[in-house]
Image 1 (cartoon, one colour):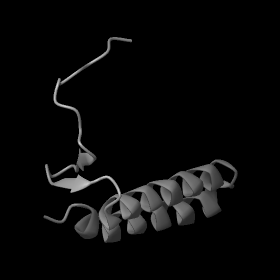
Image 2: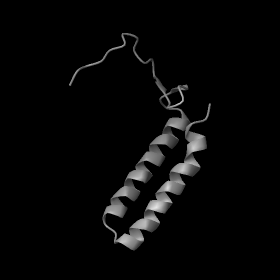
Image 3: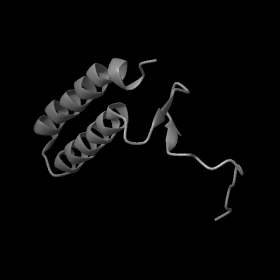
Length: 75
């Protein structure tokens, strides 16, 4: 894998999808991680379900992401 360096260091900050710069321990980053973990758990559950139940869980996952989007992409 090719290594990539900006030469600036991150100084404890990270960028969000909408180019917002926040500290890595910011509550927004915690929220993004929590939504990501929950979405992953739903994905694992979906993989174990039959078709009818799977459709219901997929709907729940879509609702989760749609409802979290305004918070996760705030400026």
